[in-house]
Image 1 (cartoon, helix red, strand yellow):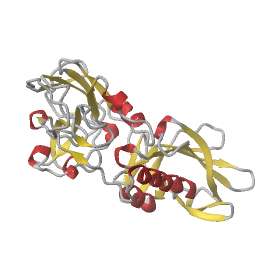
Image 2 (tube, helix red, strand yellow; image 1 turned 30 degrees about the vertical axis):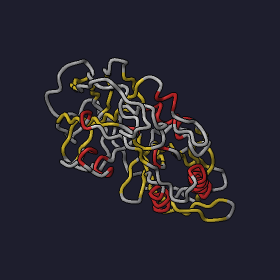
Image 3 (tube, helix red, strand yellow; image 1 turned 30 degrees about the horizontal axis):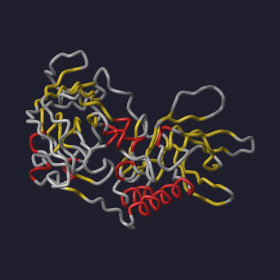
Length: 342
């Protein structure tokens, strides 16, 4: 199945909004040095330390599995540090805090050593953004609402520089490297060598007691065009909750039969731009019989270009003539894509 023309147009429209907002066709985010003389200076002598426990507070002694919860305990951080970096989403002069994540990175990962951003690539909805009081409130909501999606991952840093961040082990299919563990570093483009910390914790790809039910490729669609659009916006396609992505194809898993004749599938696919300035989700597609031999393809879709899963409504994408093999999806007499039933 391909995304509908309306879905793709909503992404394109959001790109135009973002470009107009920052006065450039190809959005380039300026970076401000953290030691810029115009930025406030902190007098705190930071001595950052990090320890990691499981959800019950016990030391982590063996490999972790997808779905496990880790508690990352930080002390000695400077809540007033990291005021430079990218000009958005956190306004210059406001402390950016730190990112905390579980993933696999290469040896060369530290911003202070010039490692490229690609060496730390990780889904933004699978990390903790630890920030001091006032930072989240300072993130703008117009002309682009950055705050909405960041609020989902924001976790507090106390005034004394301590924090406990909750991180769920959920690495992407492909990680930048194979050095698994907890990584902490200055957020939003800031560079702070003292706050770059790596705690090795091995990862097991085998299912654990908290591992979610795996996705199955039961409903298959081509996401080539969507990949090109999100790639141009320095974003991506993030499948979760029963959806999966292989190359430029995205699949949904068959859901339980409710006995009402509707074929239900589960999973969520979110298309994003950098910093989630654009965030459009499609979830839980259904095949609904229409009584004339045709089936309506419906799904929950974001109600605006930047609300993601926060506001969704089920709408009809198109219709198919059958529910086996490969079928064309039509809307208003126009073929808008194909769906493959497996």
